[in-house]
Length: 492
Image 1: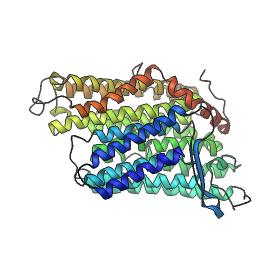
Image 2: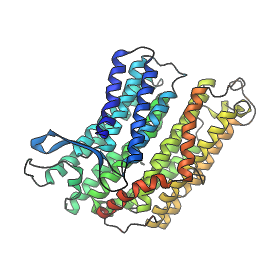
Image 3: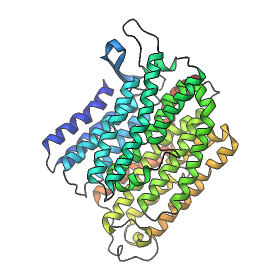
Image 4: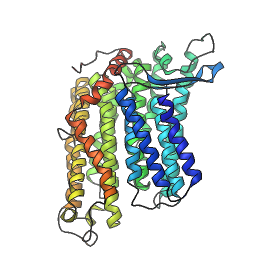
């Protein structure tokens, strides 16, 4: 029943906050998010590393059709449950020095989104997954549309159209798979994801199902060339919504690749997997080059996120155990790093009213705490050894290189380019002479420091002792490789 609680509790808390209202909404939201973190942490540390679903529930939904309310946590989803529980309280805490209109609605939407994300990462029924996949879109749409920048309406409309368009392809594929399952004693067909794994589809069917799922998930991540909604949406959204988008929501796409595409359509992956990797590698290089040219801190971080997620997708499609493990741990690491980086940009904007690098400088002279935290989050983002980014990127690059040496070498440019644009951002914003906007810059407040401290702890924990997390996912990844039909690369 723990999984059911993880889904329902933030939704119930959001409902209460919405109807109770008042200026204490942020405190109530923080308490609810911390309670959810405690439960997610308990689920992670109580999880027994194997390939089975744990803390599961299963109830009839549309019983005569074989559609069920079924969810549980396995080795593929456990890190994402932890990530969702971990980030939301610190995203809420990051708003404590900010004032938002209609605060009850603002924080209720954040918790509703957390509930939907928990549903996505734990669903064991295909249609239940689709329900939560779409439900996660609604809160973030309103967060961006109601509290975003001046250009928020056309930007959020574009984001909404993109994601709905992609989801329609996924729904068509799910309906087709549902009708391919054999009838059972109590229902005409089954929509359980595990039953989809057992289907023997024709090569032609697998090819079009591959593209139906890939388009849906590639838009969500995003992967080149389905990325054009992302930079504007990240920039125009309020920073807490941007953190939710980049830190957690884009992981739904990578998770979908692992959960649906690889085990359900292995022949489709064999035919089109290299094409998907090529698109991902193009995105890695393209996103990094565009990031180098950015002057707006938030837009720079948005393009860096686009570049990093391309490497995750490439690692998944390498069809190796190292690539899969790398994608899972990198989703955790990237979520931590990108939330930290967006919060840095928000702190600087709150004090200077600008994110333009050519209007900043000299901040480090009066901000020892911000300087240290900024540098640690930056080093994690550029994959310095002993930080969280290094573990995931090493495994991902190993997986891609194993699949194809040339693609692996091309993907490796993500580390070089990443160092260029991140260190450039740090140098231009933190060093040099102060400007009229930065001469009275103040260091972090207590609440701002408490956002960074747990993120910094996770940066070093994952970087120094990744076995804590890899051991949990390894049995489930090894089991998944059986459906892919490739020779797993041993992690031992």
